[in-house]
Each structure stands twice: as structure tokens, then as C-alpha cells.
Image 1 (tube, helix red, strand yellow):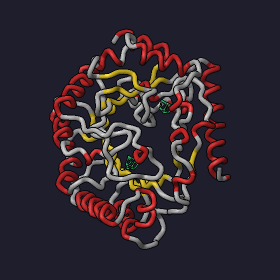
Image 2 (tube, helix red, strand yellow):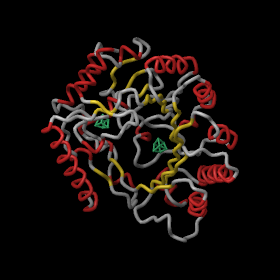
Image 3 (cartoon, protein in one colour):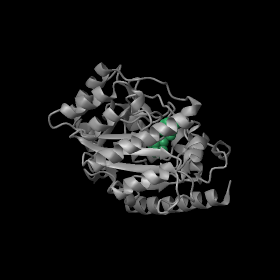
Image 4 (cartoon, helix red, strand yellow):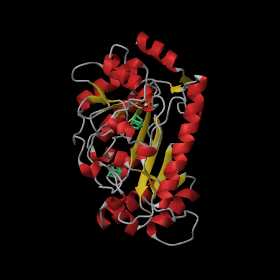
Length: 358
Ligand code: SF4
Ligand code: SF4
């Protein structure tokens, strides 16, 4: 393991250990409100094969959710009072779904409907789609993830070439033009995932860099992120092709108390199964139900032993394998997560009461 990786991993491990221990000893838990958001996976296909992602390992069925089932899932989620819907796959990109606009229109038309949140690599979008999506009344967040800061790093990270790179540039230009025309909402942000030495402030040339600087000058928030998570050992240093991006080792992060994800980041997968974690679980061990057999209300209730049992297991320190190797872990005892949900937080006891009323 590189020294920097070790240092960053140990730093995260130490801060996690200290903060979770403090909360647990005091008996204070901060469960994010369980109706904050619901993830729905519109498709599990992607157009890239990023070296630090598990998509290329093909561990997740590749499917697209049809409109009929999407409508049904949205209706169930609305009846339960979810505030926002996140149309983002764990591995995949929303623009690989040919019906994505229909799905978004459906959500946008709902009276008192949920906020819409999207994450995308932008490459599969068309100018027409972007114009319509960015004007949606209910769009709450539209985050573009860019892989690499120039063609060379894009190629090394994504395994793709000029065709995809040029599509990315063209779509960023479309966004810049829309912003210049005053169309774009505040929901838009960009995250560049690339090497550690890259600086947005530099005057250096390069088409992507110049475009990013133009977007910043138009008021779009752009951030740079270099740290990677090793997906419980599924991503190794050798996958990174010498990229200068630190790799955090999830197995070294201590786990103390249930993770916040199963409380407020549950995901309906494209095949109808319900996954307790929308961030890092591409296996089977966090599946808590199947909408082809049960309704969402039952799956996310005290009547579902798979759901309550998972939380109970995590509370006892008996984490499923995916969680054991995860650096995305955030304990309900870590006070730093108390503002994770705009709807506020509750104690674990209050969560169980909430669940038993469902
Ligand atoms: S774009 Fe996202 S889902 Fe697709 S391979 Fe890259 S990191 Fe994975
Ligand atoms: S520990 Fe990781 S995999 Fe497990 S629920 Fe939390 S974020 Fe998801």
C-alpha cells in the first residue's frame, strides 16, 4: 500500500473510531429521517468502464426499468411520503435509459410531487434532453461527474476514447450556453474526479480545463475529488494504471453501530429488488426485499425481518461482508452526520417507533 493511501486510510479510521465511540458511550444516535429520499435505479447500464468502479466487474444485473413498474414504484413511494427521488444507479448512467425523459416528465407533473435528484457522467445526454431536464420545475439536484481533467486522464480512467470525450465536451458546452441564457437552475453542480495534482485555478490550457473555468465563471459550482474507495477490496492499486489518486482501504475503517445508509438511502433496483444501501452495495447481502413479491411499505417496515435484522446485526457489530470492507460507512453515533438529512434526524429508538407505525 502506498504511504499516502495508508496515511489517509488511518486518518479516516481514527476520526471514525473517536466520533462513533463518543456518541455510543453517551447513548446519542442521529438517524437521518427515513423519508428523506428514495433511490430508484432507472437502468443499470453504463457507457464507461471506470478503473475504480465495479461496473466493469459485472456484479450487478444489467437492466432497464420499464415505465409501468416505475410508475408503480413512484406511487408507492409517494404514498409513504418520501421527500425526494434519486434516479441514479449504483453502477450505471441515467442517460443509458431511453425512457429517462418520460420518467422525469412523470415525476415533474405530479402535484406536490417529490424533488428530483440526478447524478450523471453526461456523455449519453443530448442537447435537447439537457435543455428540458434543466428546466424541470422539480429538479433539486443535477450533479455531473467528470472522470479525468484532460483527454489522457479521461482515457486512463474510463477506458474510452475521443468519441466519448468529445460528447462530454459538447454537452458541457450546451450546459454553459444554457447557463449563459439564464435557463439553468441552482441545482447544477460538477464534480471532477481526477488526479491529486490537478488544480482548477491553474491557467493551463486544454479543452476540458478551459470549459470548466468557463462554467465556474458562470457561477456553476465545480469541485475536484481525488480520493477513491476500494469497494471492499474489489478495486486494487493495480487497477489504477499509475493514476495519482489515493485509494482508501475500507477494511481498515472501524465499524461501531449501524450505518446511516439503510435508514435513508434505500434503493429500488431495476429488477425490483430493494437494496438497503444505494452507495456501495453491488452484491446480494444488503437486499431486504423484492417488489415483485411485496409492497414497499411492507419491505420498509418492522414487519420485515430482513430490514430490521440488518440494522440489528450492524448494531451488534456483525456487518455483512460488503459493509465490512466499506469506507463509506457512517455510524448513526457519529455526531458529524446529524445534518445529513434536510428533514432532520431521530434517535434509534424513535426510528423503531416510526417503523412500527408504518
Ligand atoms: S460512469 Fe460511474 S457507473 Fe459508469 S463506470 Fe464510471 S464510475 Fe462506474
Ligand atoms: S457500510 Fe457501506 S455498504 Fe454498508 S450500508 Fe454503509 S455505506 Fe452501505
